[in-house]
Length: 403
Image 1: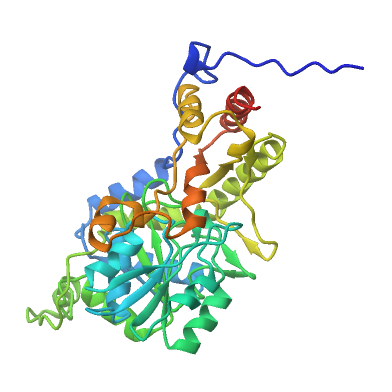
Image 2: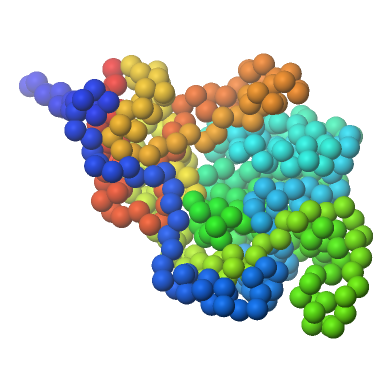
């Protein structure tokens, strides 16, 4: 008995009809009339910048993740910088992080005059490998900066044990992981400090914005001053108390989040559970369909963890395909699927090559992952048809290049 090979459609890249007529982005915000109304109400209030909505958002956010304190910032990058400051990173200090992340994770160490030290990743989870961390700790190491890549929590228990043994601070970059759970505990209430981002492609958005959660009162107080020019009081408190005097007690920045943004954040926080549920549903649909495609490796998730699925990063089994990642990427884009790549390893960027002398090859697991990674569209506003379009495009393009 003979079997018929599956029919290969002409790719849009080669003049065929694309799967979609319009581009499906890899990420997108979801804003409804309740969000708009919350912002309008704030625009009509007395406070547009650091007013009552800031405190409300911080308190609600801290309660949601299970932390004692939450301190808001103008961006996730500003939040990382503040956490590095609160951890006491300074000139001559080192902080260990992953190369497979957005540059801001490592840059925040440089902002403080420290040196980011990279440790390679686990090939299975794409998170930083604790064994690699152990090999890179020196007397100059001040902090660990793990990243919850794509929303999958890092090995937080092992990292905490390493940090305790060496007297280090854990700054968890959870900008991908709002709503993720680690052994039935929400990310945000586990590490010494946890950093979140509210960029439009994240689980909730304030336009731009960030947050650091912590159980440490001193860290929280230092970060509040740091975001406000190093000043020990804010304008709203001074107005309420009927006084003008203020003092700058440390060198800080203007990293404050506005009342407008926090009004939006408060409203979005009310929808976070349903946003997470939809992302997890999309991830399940992807996994069911894509695991059947030869040459596609779907992301793994530990049974004791519940990822937040900021990204859905597949890897290509390039040895089983007749094209490289770049051509498959172009093929999917031509089908109007807005795939992306996360990330170019930080040490391979020209600035890091020039400053620290990286040549490539230093972190083989991260570099190999980068060469095969493609991020599929993943956002809570995706329709079932959007998901079907992504799967069909993957089947169409990957089949075309199957050996």
